Image (cartoon, rainbow, N blue to C red; front, side, top):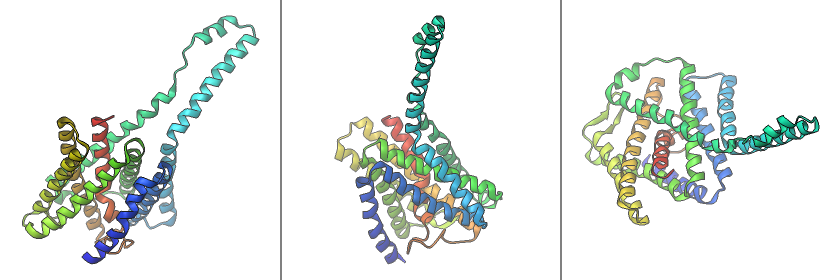
Length: 313
């Protein structure tokens, strides 16, 4: 099993790194969108949606907002031009009709540039951040109650739609609006934390982190992951020569991002245990399904993006 995991990782990691640095933003968005849709297909199976029609509707419910978010800036650009041309045309009509008072007034009106609202999408990061913090608190304090929680399939589908869409959105925005190295850093941060948690837990693990949810995870493994996150932040700060204040912000953000990622993993473990399955799929040899590999990323990316935006808007 470990050998399969290593071989799969050795194949996928270089491809992901190439995608981060070589793909144009549009193609990167498309690639992450396809991975998200594969994860969505696993999610509908995980929550018990068996109807092909309902599965197709779930995927469509993801694709449509993805397209809207992807073309949001272009949409505002077109709308701004339409608004400006409409006002100019109205002024022309009023002049031709000899409505001088109205035309004079319209010429003095300052038409708002709605393109300034392109940044309003940043506010969408708040709901997923709050959601994952709430998930962390609930799993940490009441794991047994979370496991026994019974929800209708429609609500489980809505949660999956929400977390998958927000993960796609903010990973794409991170890659589009910030240096590519930052996207790679985020991925390396989660990978390093995952590897550190695995080997630290194997070597020193004694106290179970959440035995009701995931018996294999230990408190010592979690500490190993948090330490790995701190080391990643220190290395990044040294490489780029960050001032002490920025370096400390990155250190705190990295550690907290890893913490959120751990409980994101536990969240999907809850769903799998409720369904009675070990893996979300079998697409990746040694790793299970797509969701099994990106569960930590799904939870961590909104939090990481929010932190990056606060450090450097």
